[in-house]
Image (cartoon, rainbow, N blue to C red):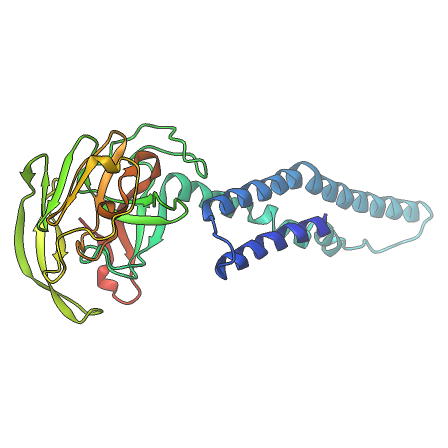
Length: 321
């Protein structure tokens, strides 16, 4: 077992290292699932086989010492009882290969359940959601609001609420589902969404906006036009770069592309059933549904709801719209 366990642990370490070095495209959900299964098998084996055998060995040692004591006493020989505490502790102690498997199972299964069915942490890698979310924000995503899904295979097992306009969602990027993206839903199934001349309309009705003071982007070292927009119950802020053209450049082929009409003013799309149209709040610096199409419902991971840490700016901690 030690050799087999060493090989299993080496495989996990090798996969993680290859992922870190970009030799393979990692899948953390699958890795965590496999770790849960493997450590769970060891945990069951520990409870059902290995621990009872160690306890039996400790009991046998006690019985042997008691028998020896009784035999000497029968011969009239006075002896001092042997302290077996340390010896029993050594026998009962888990070997290293069980410490690193069965011993880690409770922690791994707790992380697996929380991450798969309750909340999942993400880090914002780009500026596409500025000013709502900044690069380096560490966020939490609710995994059950839209219905619980099985990890790895993503099959829905509870219905939950339907994603709504204005929700900030994490989803598996349709052109490459191994990547996670975060955007705001602007169109739900059946909506006619148009973004023309940098103005959003839904089903023919302009989305209400108000002008805010210009936003200074410290990374770009320039100001951008800032608005608040009301897609859902509460408004959110967005940025517009007046220097960028309104038309969509280099839109890719994607499923249901025939539902979209591109022009020099922008794009208008009819959202198909079971899909959503998403955009970044940094409207002219976001690769979103305008470029690669609709997000299938099955790709949605969950609803982002909290910034739990930003090591460069602790004031960022808290909820957001």
